[in-house]
Image (cartoon, rainbow, N blue to C red; front, top):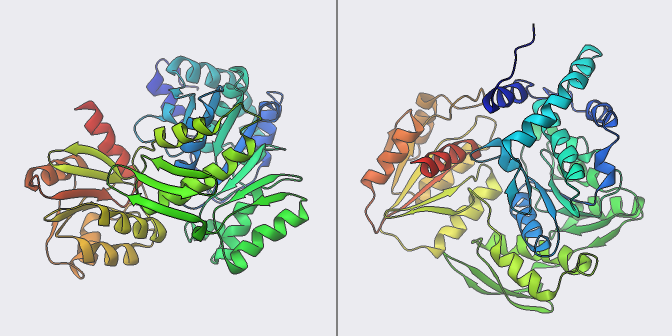
Length: 428
């Protein structure tokens, strides 16, 4: 018997309970679902953004800039505090009412497809809601971030993107995307369609060749740059400033050297499409500076200073540690937890070299989460001053309590953990 859905939480539980794909990655399920809604994804302009790290920040930069003159949809994942954040138009999240109304229309088609053996997962349903919502709200264009990989990600149902933007490539989700950087790059390159425009974060060697070959095969135009084309003027704790080609003194409020390159990648795309979407160079300057990305080097407390950063793989943790050079502090207090399928030995090794104290906690409601006692034993082998507190909020408040105004606290290792803390800070 079907459970009646009465409030937003019931609808949220309904979509979450659709579960993960569990290895059955295919576009056939969402293709059948969206065909029942007359394929809204093919009736809107889409900038498709893929990559291992930086795709969320790059997507926010694109959306913030384009929204100065256009009605722009933005799809990102995972959300930080509420599922509505995944789907927004020009900075306004989808309402509870619109979210529920679209699910009401999806329920019967989903049930029929389930019976036919085409079960759409949580993320596939969220993707369908997004494409239907953006089409019905008549966006001028949508910036759509890939969930995982590229080729078989449910967002990749679109036939003809206006632009493909590809950020960094590094090893993550190797059990799904492949063991080598070339395999992972090949998966990301799956978003490139016939006669596409592709804007590529700097790549080298065989990884770059994956993209040049794909562009050649698909008759697509490739735009990229070398890092030495960028002149960095300032890397600070509140903003970056740099020169890039014809753009001088560009500022970003997203900090860290990696955000300079993310901004340059976004700028590469924006400069190329600016006339199509009525943007001026001034709009590009303004949009890049206005863009933020919750949970990425985000200062959520000033006394004591507390940063949240969802870095959870090798490349992201390297970027975080490099960014910490822009801060002065007496002691670095690291709050941390991580999922078991991440490169935790490398991450723990790196954090143990910069930390003055480490506080460990448990990631809640995730089967891939480390058992706290097991994580404690691993960290204890590398670092002496370790505290373990199972409840994340209790652990977070403990870090606040022990930090002086001259200390810096950083919570990192998992976007799930960071989202939990961000939600707590917003509500308290």
